[in-house]
Length: 286
Image 1 (cartoon, helix red, strand yellow):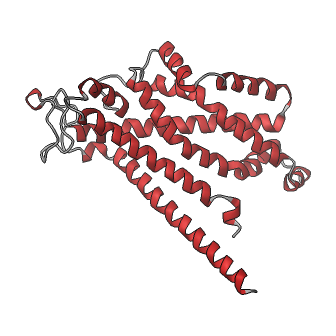
Image 2 (cartoon, one colour):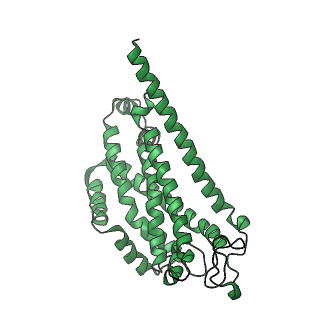
Image 3 (cartoon, rainbow, N blue to C red):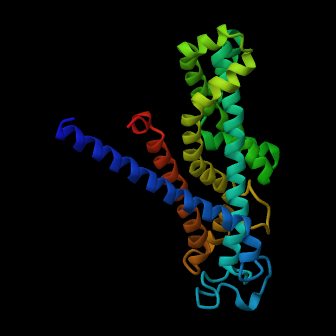
C-alpha cells in the first residue's frame, strides 16, 4: 500500500472518530436536558407556582438567579418545570408525525396505485399552506390547549415524513435482496417490517431529530399566541408571552425562557447534524 493511501486512510479514521466524539457529546447534552425535564419537580429551588407579590419582578440575584415574574414566582424554577411540558410535548409530537408519516409513506411507496395517488395529493394539499398558519387555524378550531396544539402541528407535520418514506421505499423495492426475499415466500408485512423499515430508518431518524428544534419553536409559537398551554401551567412559549409587555422594565422575564428555547433547539439541531454525518454511508464505509 502506498504512503499516500495510508495517509488518506489515517485521515478518514481521524475524521470518523471526531464525528463519533461529537455525536457522543451532543447526545449527552440532549440526555441531560431530558433528565432535567424528567426530574424537574425535584430540581426546582422554589415552588414554581407559588405567588409572592412582595417579590414581584425582582431582578436576578443570588436568591433568585433568573429573577422573578410579575407574580413573584421564581423564574429559574418555572423554566425548569416548564422544560417538562416543552420538551416532552415536542418529543411526543415528533414521535407522532414520524410514526404516522413513515407508515403512510411505506404503504404508498410499496402499493402505489390509487391509494398512493390519493394520499400524496392530500399531503400536497397540506404542504401547499404555510405550516404555522395552518396550525394556527387548526388549533383555533380545536379550542387551544397543549393537546390540541400537538394535534394541530401533527396535522401539518406528517407529509414531510410520508414523502421521505415513500421515496426511500420505492428505491428499496427494486433492490435485489428484496426480490430474493419475495421469492423465499415472505409475506408483505414481513417484507415491510423486516427489510424495508430497517433500511430506510437512518434518514428518517435523522430527519426526526432535526425536526425536534422546528417543532419546539412552532409549539412555543402557538403557546405564545395563546393557543398552547393554559395558565398557570409553565411553558417556555407562554412565559415569553407573559414577559413581552414588560420587556423594557423586566427583560429577564422574556429573555430567560427565550434562552432556554435557544439552547434546547441548538443542542438538538447539532445532534441531528452530527447524527446525519455519522450515518452517512460514505462515513460508515470508511
